[in-house]
Amino acid sequence: MSFEETEERQALRKAVAELGRSYGHEYYSKLARSGGHTTELWNEAGRLGYLGVAVPEEYGGGGAGIGDLAAVCEEFCAAGTPMLLMVVSPAICATVIARYGTDAQKSRWLPRFATGEARMSFAITEPDAGSNSHRITTTARRDGGDWLLSGRKVFISGVDEAEAVLVVGRTEDAKTGKLKPALFIVPTDAPGFEYRQIEMDLVSADKQFGLFLDDVRLPYDALVGSEDAALAQLFAGLNPERIMAASFSTGVARYALDKGVEYAKQRSVWGAPIGSHQGLAHPLAQVKIELELARLMTQKAAARYDAGDDFGAGEAANMAKYAGAEVAIKAVDTAIQTHGGNGLASEYGLGTLLGAVRVGRIAPVSREMVLNFVAQHSLGLPKSY
Image (cartoon, rainbow, N blue to C red; front, side, top):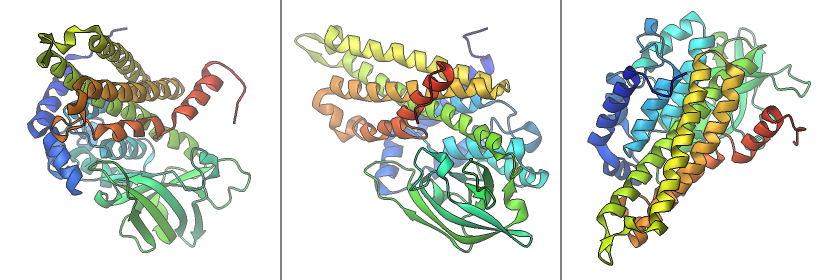
C-alpha cells in the first residue's frame, strides 16, 4: 500500500493545474455571470487528452482509471475553473458505455469522449422520486423494433451543451415495485424530447434543466447493455459520479483554502499578519486536516473502483462524497470569514462559492442518504427507510 500517487498522476495534476490557472477564476466567473459556458477551456482540455484519461486506449483515450480523471477534475476546481459536466460526461456516461455498451456504441461515442468532442448528460432524478430511485416512473415500452420513452426528469446538468442524454428509465413490465432500470441514449434533438432551464440562485457556468419525454421514439440499439441487468450497470456509473463529486468538492475546498491562507499571510492588522492569530489560524488548519482526510478517502474509493471492487468502492465513494462536501462548505465559510467584508466582494472570488459548495451536500446523493447507507451497510444497523 502506498500513499504516494504515481509520477504519471503527479505530472498530470501539474499539467492540468497549469492549464486551469492560465484561464483562472476570473475567466470562469465572467462566463458564469453572463450565462456563458467554459467551452474554450473544455475544448482545450479535450484536445490535450485530459478529459479522456479514463477512456480505453483502443478508443483513443489514456487507458487510465477513474482516479486519474478525478485528479483532473480536482485540479480544475482548485484552479478556480470548475466544470461540472466532467462529473457527468466523461465519468458516468463514458464509463457506462465502456463497460456495457455495444461495439457500435463504443465506436461511436468513446473516441469522441476521449477528445471532449462528445458531451452527454445523465438523467436519473425525477420530480416525484427524489432520493427514492425505486420510484422512477420514466417508462420505456416496445413498439415493434423501437422503444417509446416517456417521463420527466429534473435537475439535469448541462443539457444545453450535450448532444445526447443517458436517461435512466424502467421497462414497462417492471410491475413488482422492484427497481429494474434500463439505460437509454437519447439525442437532445429527438422528437418528443424537450428541456427547460431551471432558474437557480447559483452563479455557475453549468445550467440545470427539467426534461420532458413524450413518447420519444428510439431505435432498439439506444438501449445500453441489458434491460434485465441494468441495476449493476447503473451503479457502474453512480460510483464514479460520487468519486468525481468528492474530487469536485475537494478541489473547490483547496481553492478556498489557498485564498484564505494567502489573505491571512498578507493582511496585516495590529502590526502583524492576521494569520498569526489563532482565531484565524486554527480554523484554516482544521480545514487543511479535514481536506487531506477527504482526499485520501477519495483516492481509496477510486483505487477500489479501478480494481473492480464495486461494492467496496460504493462504501468508500459515499464516504468520500460526504467528507468532500462537508470540508468544501467549511473551507469556503472559513475563507470568507478570514477575509472579513472582502470575502463577499466580487474581486476576491469567494462569495459565489457559498451556494455552489452547498450543492455538494445535496447532490448527487444527499448527506442523509449517505448516512443511511453507512448505517445499514457499514454498521449493519436496521434499514431506516
